[in-house]
View 1 (cartoon, one colour):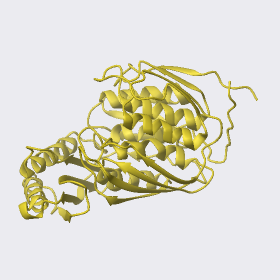
View 2 (view 1 turned 90 degrees about the vertical axis):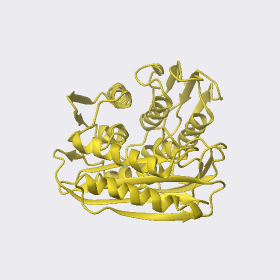
View 3 (view 1 turned 30 degrees about the vertical axis):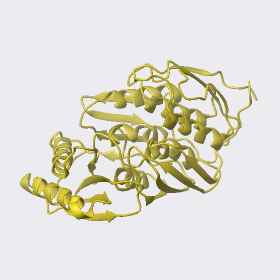
View 4 (view 1 turned 90 degrees about the horizontal axis):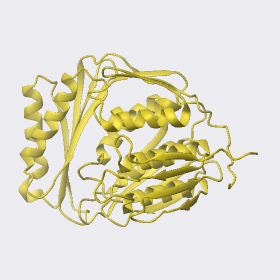
Length: 361
C-alpha cells in the first residue's frame, strides 16, 4: 500500500498557537497521514513546543505508534508519522508541570473515539488556569454535546491542580464509536430553562471563597433575568496548593448549551471571578449564540467527522475558530461555511471500522 504524501503545515497560520499543533497531530493520526509542522507556535513567546504541547504530541504518538522527529521542548519543527490505527487500552500521561491536562484530554479524545477498543487514561497536570478549558467546562459542556453526537466518554476529577504546582489528576474513559458521529444542529438559542454551576476552592474554606464566588455569580445572573442558578460549592483539601475555579452553564429549551468559567489567581478576588464568569456567559447569550466562545472551536473537529451537515451559531469568529475551520478543510476536504456568526460544516462521515495502517516512508 502506498504511503500518503506528508502534509506540510505552517504553524504560524491563524492562531499560531499550541491549539493548532494539538489539533493537527490528532487529525493526522485519524487519517494515518504523515505530518510535517514548521514555525511551531511562531506567534507565542517563547515560540516552539512547551512541555504541555510535547506531552500531547507524545500521547497521540503512543496511540498510533507514530515516528516523531523534533519532539523536544523548544522545537519549532515537528514530524509525525502514524504507523497504525488508533489503539485502545490503558494509558498514563503526566505533563510534569502545571501545563494543561484538559488540553491533553481535548487532543486525545477524538483519536480515542476512533480507537479499536475501549480506553482508560490517567492524566496529570494543571486543571484550572487561564487560557485553557477547565475540567468543569469539559465535563458539563463539551462532553454532553458530544454525547448527543454519539460519543460515549466519561471524565472524572481525582484531584484539582492549579498553577504553579499542578498535580491535578483526571480519569478519562472512552468507548469507541460503532457508527459515524451524528451531526449537531443548534439553530435557535431558545429560552434559558436551567442554570447550574460549580464553585471550587482548595484549602480556602476559612475565607469562604467557594461560597462567595457562588453567591456573587448567582446574584449577577438573577439580576440579568436568568432562572434561579443552582451552583454547587466544593471545599477541597486534596490539592497540592490553594486554588479556586468557578464555572456556570445555561441550557435552553432548544438544546443550546453555553458555559463560562475562570480559575483563581493571586490578587484575583472571589467577587471579581464571579463577575467575570457572569459577564462572559451573559455576553455569549446576548450574542444569540447556541454554543459558547470555547465550544465554538472545540466542536469543529467532531462536526467535520460527522455523517451530515452540522450548524450552530458562535458568539464571535475568533482566531481559534478560523484556525480549526482551516485545519478540517485542509485535512478532510469538508465544506465549511461561515456566514456572519453562523457556522455550517458538511461532515466527512468517517467510519469507525475503517482501519488504516500507515507505513514508514
